[in-house]
Image 1 (cartoon, rainbow, N blue to C red):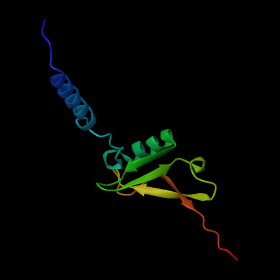
Image 2 (image 1 turned 135 degrees about the vertical axis):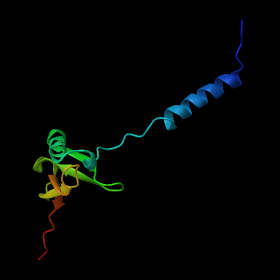
Image 3 (image 1 turned 120 degrees about the horizontal axis):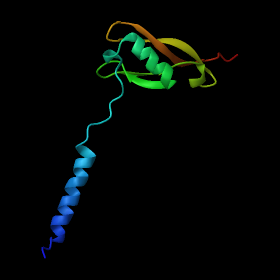
Image 4 (image 1 turned 90 degrees about the vertical axis):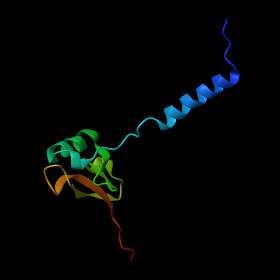
Length: 102
């Protein structure tokens, strides 16, 4: 019967672990630039709140409605470049309301 040395088994297991950790591509967030304006709007509507890439090194959080904002936040329109529109009104972002102190 063929016996495999323990060092060989450990090396194979270690190699498999490295491939699993570093060999798989990272999950990229959806990119507005690859979608039409309507597709980006629909994705936000279906997701409720989602982070989307808006450029090579930029991203934004988009929300469908007020439910996805904090108590002291209000909705503001949020725009992003899409495949068919330079400034698509994708959805909204939550802006914190600062109340002046007396």
